[in-house]
Image (cartoon, rainbow over all chains, first blue to last red; front, side, top):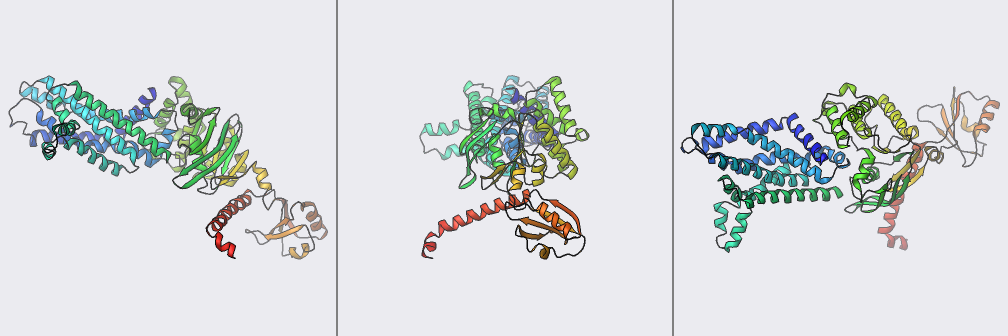
Length: 243
Length: 327
């Protein structure tokens, strides 16, 4: 547990000693602004809520999160530090969790820095702050889901660009399988198949959380999803290690 | 004590380490010698728990690496090949991270970091990020990381690679001082290093042990063991003067000087006293005269090239056994 914290601390510090964290946060904020105010017609809608802001998060994350996650393991492999790390007396689970949580906290920091939008909407109207809080939570959980996929893909290769592309591709599947287009394409299939496909999508669970419906099942989905992909990361690292 | 028994490591069809067995005791400094690709690094990676063996056992101080990896890893200090470290951290941050992972905190942590910074002479680069350091400093950071917890077992993969002669000398002294009650395994292809720091040397090639002994013993197995080096001040027909001598097997001219010769004895014969007497009686123009203990380099080349030859021949024999029979 202690070791997990030391790994976490080192990883988080390294995001901030390199420009990575700053570039990520700045681009995230700029893109959020563009999506919300420009493409999301924040003012024109005349509604005091943040649904245009949160509605774009899955698509924003699709490219932003893989960029953080791609280096998690691939860089360690490339610089050879993986050999150093894995010969220190640290359990593999501590490494996987420590690295993941550092990246997740970075996403959290970026999300927290968007609170001026929350203030704005409170200044302009009278929104339901409970819904906005739930949506923030949902967005952060979803970011964790993207990251966990990224962690696993990054463990597969020493090339972070490949890790990036694989992560984007797999994340896209998990986002897109909740969209109308994909679900309509399965209209011929029995209803339970369609439900299963929709149930695997980030969108389905994120949408209901961001509407303020804090269903335990939606939260559990993200937690189980993250845990499974992190477990897969550990397995991939273990297999790669043998070769 | 490190016990390695029947260790084999295969990568797909390539066998990097082939049924390797040896034991290393406290106080021994074991030099791992071998050509590139001999399996030195792979063996070290298995001992340190980075790679899992295909078959065989590794025990360090009674702990089996497969069953109790964390216990083994806390006993070992390891400098991986190329001395990798996190390039975006400063030297101090990096050592601090290692110390925390190794379980130190507070004053003890500070004391250990200070000591290792002095031992490896890193004071001047404490606050520099590692990717701005020279190769020599990077290697020393790697070394500092390995010895920070005063480990019982120290495994160093090419510790002096990329260092200048002064730094090499410094690192060798450091290893010698550290070695007293520890097990040290270093891999190198610098043979003088083995004679300088190791109490035992193992030569491996193709993943197998070809020779195992003290550096002196291995030197004595060289062709040059008991040879006499003789340097002359003017032209003199040494070959004619020694033509009658049955104990001289061969006279070799040295590469570096036209007037320096190596006299190789017939195995089992002593040349020194005899040649010394001859040179005085014959008034040879001798400026230098000494006994060669043997050359590790020669022995190394001898065993590793022979083994390559043997495996090539075996391969030929395997693939063309029918033709051989016909012939």
